[in-house]
Length: 545
Image 1 (tube, one colour):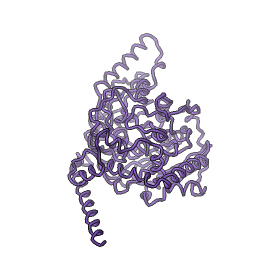
Image 2 (cartoon, one colour):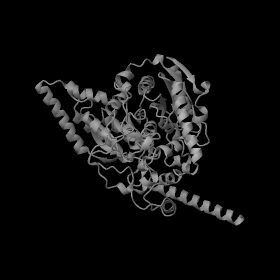
Image 3 (tube, helix red, strand yellow):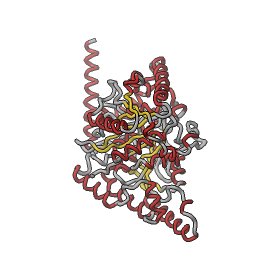
Image 4 (tube, one colour):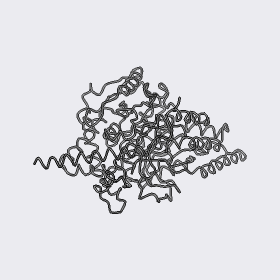
């Protein structure tokens, strides 16, 4: 027995040493391109060059219609901005700048034609001539659609995903596609195909995942808005780490057709599509354009009460809301809330207390016990609800051994897969090993959803931290791999959630933020509170300012 324990000890020690050496080699290969001061100067220069960086998508559309700026000017300014900052960020992984400028010129020509023929410019689509970016996992005609998987490097989209088609029909002009984590399932956007994406506020920090490329390029000011997806926080974490707004809509509001990978079964409602943007006013505007069934995504349903989402959000009386707040999930699996994140939440709570009734969730006696099991609840509900396994996606139709690839990663680093992806292939099997416990956690999740909806009712919102920490250093999330549950648990509860930037931390100058959560179908409430908090705390603060 002693000999067996000695062998196991030596084996674990060897694996640990190999892993440390592997991360050391990985970090050496991914050294920062410039120091922090040089990066700050480049970010500042890019912002000064792009006089349109502080405007919302709606404002840009109005400028194009009024003639105060052309689509070509606005698109060119954002393209130049991307060209200057992307060598530092690696957020954009493939551009279509030439095509975007051609589309911008066509948008300007159409306005000239309308004016000459006396046609009202009000008949133009709402995003006419406004540039944007798209997460690479969404099909955009002529662009790669690999989702960071090396075996899909030659996949080129032949048609647009539903939401991409809808924003283009609304007049938007995609400039590029942006980086993701491998198969969109980790909280740091790096993969073996496109590499690592960096944070515009500090290049040594993560951008979040899996919509990290979107968060980074929008946070830098180089894109007015973008399209993201979210099954565990993949819109909200990147929006938070990069200081911008992100909205995870009610489960089933916006179709995910045309993205890869896509969930199946009940999990189609856990996987949501939504916008990331610089300004709060664009969230309802863009969600309205994106939402509604497309007769392909079986999880997408009609929400008649949200058909006039933008107007409904504007009409919300903040003083009539019932606001709840909660500061953390109490579990050994997640980190303690950093003091600055607690201060950020407290500031939001104090602001809302000036206008409406505010109650601590702890005082109600609700949610707490089950919410502290959030990691297990999310894992079990995804396991039961999604017939698509991560292992099958990694294999991509080819022979695949998780253990063999993990050993290759540890010893020689020759595998095309990332460590988080390989580890996920192992742990996703855990719920199947304990079917009774898994079934109980699924029931707990369903009860937690009912309890949340009963507490919030039709006029309540919950304020909750976006993450336990500000953006960590690269690879650090591997030391606390479950912190994403601060965002992830709300997916399986089908709740609409808006990430709201709340300025920068005093010590490190990194973005702060909170989530605003409501009952399924009450997106207008979270969007209204986001707008209110932006008015009070100024929202997105451009890097280098």
